[in-house]
Length: 521
Ligand code: ADP
Image (cartoon, rainbow, N blue to C red; front, side, top):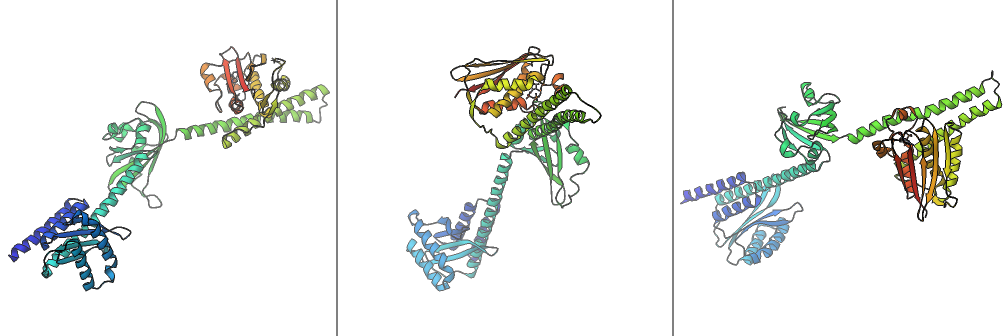
């Protein structure tokens, strides 16, 4: 009989440890612990309560309590546990007995065991039974071991939950990262990719996973070495100066799956096992197209600006030096001609600086401030013509506005800039001279000004881009003529800030007509 009982105890223990190791579902483990405890003590009611992080107790497993009594049980026991530390053993025993009797009056004896793991109280295991005989020390020992097992199970489950949470957090970071992420095994086979990688490379996860790194990551152009070169050079073998693992940066134009190249920077980082074996390489891909373009634009801009600024300064300086020569005695006509050149070049310089300042201001403020007043466009046109007429002998500048052309609300300073840019372009891009006409027209709501030249004109594809910042058509003429590619960009910005729009009509060799339309009110 005793042997039989011992065997059963052993079976319970075995069953519980199996439950703990076999699965990590906490409620299932607790249910089995509870059932084994009840079976061993021949109890009728069993409850396991766990403490949450805030110290409050919650029922996690229960056997033998009517649903209607569950709430009562929870409040009574929680209340009891809150005060338990202050009670003597006898008081605790008595209070527990009272609770048991409230739940089911037939209950005669109770057992309460704390669940403790590594010194931390995690909860309590309660068993009530309908008869009372003193429990053998052996019973209590086994029950204690059940409680320990339950405590281990709770701890495992909490660990598992934490790991699972961490895993889900990492996978969300990975999945929603704006950078492409590629995970490789130690043999450089792809084991995972994120959504950004799919977008960037054109490879779907399903197609990429399982393939070799080199089958998916191919470059049309490389800045330096690639992953293979890095591995061959042993980048991951040495630790960085600060003791961290070394990473490898590769930059170039990646061939997307559809054959379109895209500028990327890839950072490869290795993961090692405890004994130093390379198990995983994480590659982080960033689309650097915008960065590249900005860099290129900056380079072009700086060389262009320095050239653009130097030329008029050199001309001004040369002419001023001519006038200043002590050995020369210039006649009045020569002095005037030289002074005219100086004045024209100063105007050009001023226009260029004005354009530059306005562009950077617009970039910074993302808008254009206007000082609106009544503006006579015919007056602005004739003044502009006066300014430019002296700069060219080859061109005839003429304007034609209806006599009753209305004044419009506008910023005269900025609209003057529009005329200057359009007229100076008309002169620059008609190297063989010709007529430059400025016409005005209006209706009830709008006024339109056209600047027409007989110059080199432009192709359809050039027409699409002329209003872009820094754009200059790639003709031999525009390469020879000075320009920053800002004039039309600013012209468009100014006109649009007035609530209007610009248009261009042109064909190669047939001259160009730029028109801008402004609202009358
Ligand atoms: P840029 O300083 O180069 O003149 P713009 O923004 O004023 O810059 O003009 C952009 C480009 O548009 C020019 O480089 C030129 O190729 C083209 N373009 C502008 N105006 C004309 C025109 N009247 N005839 C032909 N091409 C023009």
